[in-house]
Length: 357
Image 1: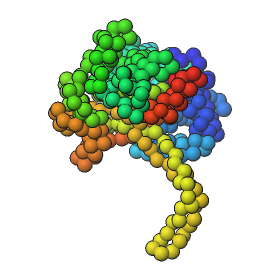
Image 2: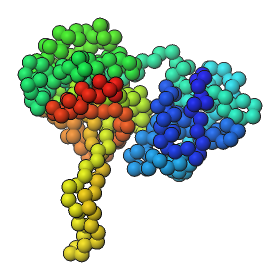
Image 3: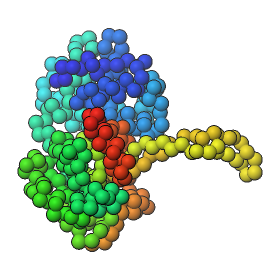
Image 4: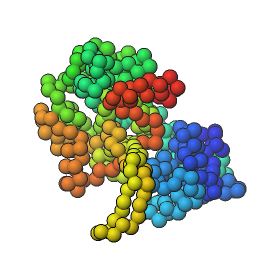
């Protein structure tokens, strides 16, 4: 039971941003909305927050606004509680029956006195996925750093990028990692070996030619579990477990991590209707969601990838959409950087020094 559940309690007047702080402070990844007597009104999960980000909701708005939006959704489920006296087997049965991962515990007065999570009730903390790190790129834009090293082996803060990625996967509960290699791939396999020294089992797929951002996945062995794919030049603190939960909750066949990106137009923008000017916006800021280079795919998706041919992730995504398959976005609100150019590399070095990653 989470003994620090009091720190997870907020009111309907609390801001969504405050709810995010509560969620990030706890491994439970939930905030409890309570009244003055600490009776449960609702729960705010990590998934609720990410859906709010995708919808463009102001994070300074009250939680009551988010609750109202949730209750109007077909996905909404009234918060479930259990008595503090409930035994663990009954709690686990209730979670599985209701398809939930948290149960607030209440006393005889219905006041919240604790919180139990699915992870507490199940001893195996392994994340039920296999991870693939795409590490075949030559990193021409990072030369001379990559003249003698594959891009994922370029050190950031004194350690290879790929080492940081693999350790993050391990810490998230991933036990099996496959690395695709091409340019100077032997330096990667020599460094990591079978992965035993890094707490995971590592296998390799060597591409004999550049296969694009998805082509190498055609060489994966069949699996009955979702596959996490991450580019080998990304540093992030994304919550992989939250991404898997989001993927499962939305019954997705592919989830694409996205990052909010702001671009300021350096000119005055003229909006028109035919020849008439309707508005002038001076150097407006335009928001987009960009591809964050992290994906979750169901096993049958890999059948669409042509064998031994160059193929990119955007092609796979568009193919799935065209076929009417469920492809969703998962917003990354944690630290994230794509080290594609020297300015990104310098920023990553600075971020490591400041402890951001």
